[in-house]
Image (cartoon, rainbow, N blue to C red; front, side):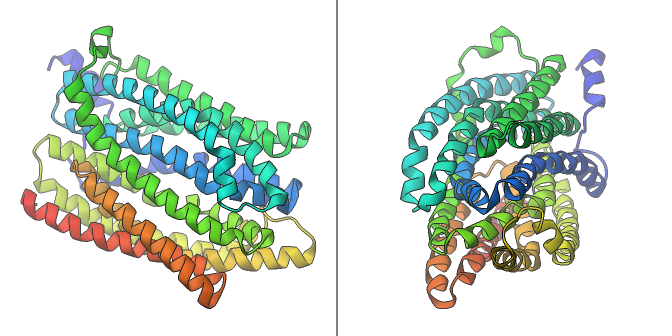
Length: 454
């Protein structure tokens, strides 16, 4: 490698040397900050709609949640899988291979985004009807989701580029992209929903425009990157490389899709309890992103850490990284869970606006659900540790199988327990899904470590 080539690497984070704990925390903190601003998309929509458009509008937003997650998680799954190969090639100091992997990822992502956009727009109304969305909110749900899905190309673009930047150790550029887009989203929400009175449609439009800005920021960063900016020659279709990328990305996308299908099945059970319960359930679900925020960030950090060290042949560092990630995750989850138990009601009150009787009932549903998830949060955080380590090692099959376990546990518990203990059954379904997936991936990681001699 020439001195000119080394210089840009020095500004990035090489995770094959140094303290695992310091590396994981320093890499995760910008991701965490970026996730905070990304959550502002959801929380701003929810707070403004819940406060100024009423329970019906809030329930409309919630009825679309799992279908939104299904569509977006497929895109995110593919791009996350693609970034695994990029981090491994960065760790191996294979810059030519890195550019080839990135170029093929761009082509694959563009194709996947186009197909996803067409199918999601066509299936929006039929899926919401299949989920037995209440008649008084289905119109708002369909209107929101169809505008929201217009942002699919931007979501694919942002996640691919952010994943590529993270793979080479740059966790700050995705943060700056989120800062720009989140500020825009807040301003446009206020303008479209409160100023223009566009309601739920305005919230969706604000999100799409903000997503476009985050994608544009990352694109500008990539263009300036000597490591990632590919020339035309790298876009020549490489079928074996595309196959390798799909073998990594498809299981992650399938895992996310299976989890989403389970969530949609639970959504159907939730819808049977009426729109007030759905509004309370939705308010807590919008805080789910804050609950798992640190887990996602440390998960990305651990995946990149593991991928770079696998690529560099530094298997000795992976065990130490896993120990550090475990301590960090359990500690962080306990702190976040405790804060949510203390501050949950004031936060939830930002999303719920209704006459007192309806407000009290929706708040009861929302806080009970939040309390159950907060107490169980260490389980979710360890699930992310196991999953991220496996993915960094290039094993995306075991996480996919854990998605199937989540599906079975979530649906079975929701259906059975809701008949025995009522609406509480839908709350415990989420925890059961976490437990099942965590156990399976913990076993898979132990076997993988043994096979690799870690």
